Image (cartoon, rainbow, N blue to C red; front, top):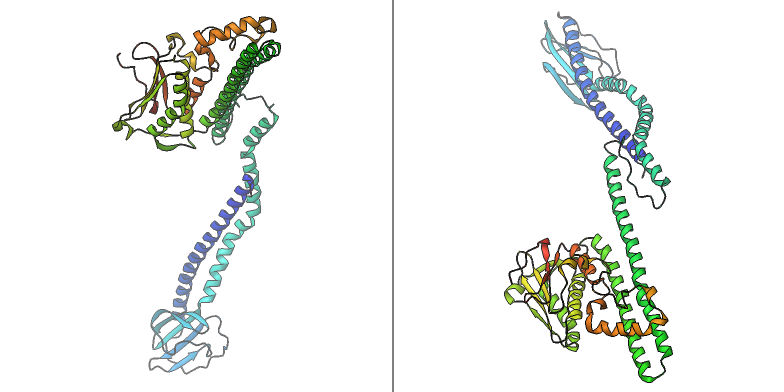
Length: 474
C-alpha cells in the first residue's frame, strides 16, 4: 500500500472504527449503570406496593424464568407466595439489594419488610444488559451508517490536500533534462515547502556539479591536445631520422612524451575519482596513525629521490608520532602526500633536499613538505591550485597545439632541451595541487604555501582540523 491517500483513508477509517468501538463500550457501561439504577428503583417501588397484611398461601402460576419474580414470606418464615416456582432463587431473603449467581444467570434481588411480611423481588440481569446494549447501538447507529460518507469525505479532502504534490510532479515531468532552475515556493503548503526547498537545493548542487564537469571536460580536452600533438610530431621526427643517433634521440623524446601524456591521463582519472568521493563525505574514513602513512609515502619515493640525487627524509619526533592521528581515508591521504612529495622532487635540482616534517600533533596534526627548488611566486600561490595551471614560460607541453607543426622541428627539439634545464615546472600536468586541494577539503584540512625556511624553495603546510596558522619566523 504505497498510496498516501489510501494510507490516510484506511488509517482514518480504522481509527474511527476503533473510536466507535471504545465509545460503544463506554456507552454500554454507562447505559447499564443507569439501567441498574432505574430497575433498582422500580424494584423498591414494587416491593412497597405489595400487601402488608397476612394472607393465606397462594401457589404461583408462572413456570418461565423470565421477567420479574416475586416471593413473599410471613413473619414466621412461611412462604406465602412464589410467582415463579421453578426459578432457582435463595429460599431465604437477605434484606436490601444483592446480586445472586444461579445456573440460569445472574439475578438482581431486593428484599424488604412490608408490614407483617418479608417481600423479595428478583429480576434477571440479562434483561438489563439487553436494554443497555440496545441503548448503545441506537446511539452509535447514526455514526456507523455515516462511515461510508465519512470515508468519501476523507478521500476527497486528502486528494485536495495532496494536489500541490501532484503539481510539483507534473512540473518535474514537464521539465527538459537540462532545466535545473529552482521551483517557486509561493503558494505551497507548509508541509510541501520543505520538500521543494530540499529539491531546489539538490538542483542547485547538481547544476554546480554539471558546470564543473563541463569545465573539467573542456579543460581536459584542451590540455590533452597539446601532448597528443607533440606525440604526433615526435613520431614524424622518428620516421624522418636518417642516422642511428637521431633515431635514438627521437625515440627518447617520444618515450618522454608518452610518459608525460600517461601521467596527465592518470592525474585526470585521479581528479575525477576524488571529486565524487569528497561529495560522499566520510564513508571510507577511519581513525589511523599519521606517521606510518607518511613513512610509506617517503619510502615509495625514495628510489626516485636517489636517482635524481635528492636527499628525501622524514622528520617525525617520537613524542609527536605517538599521538598524531587523523580520521581519514588512507588511500586518499596517500594520494595527497604523494602528489606533494612528487612535486617537490620534480622541481628540486640535483643535490637538493626534500623534507617531510611532522610539525605538531595536538590538537590536530600539521605536516610540512619543504624543498630547495625554485619555489612559487607569491602572486601565483592561489592560482596553482586551479586545474591545469602550471605557471612559468610556455614550452612544447603547454604551448597551443596550433603552434606545433612538422615545419617547427628544430624549435620543438630546442624547447625540449631547454625544458629539462631551465623550466622544470612545465613538466607537470597542472593537476597535482588541484587533487591535493580536493582531498584536503574532503578531510576538513587546509593547505598553505610558504617560502622555505632558508628563503630558497617552497614549504607546503597541511593542517588537519581546518586550522590555519601563520608561518613561523625565519
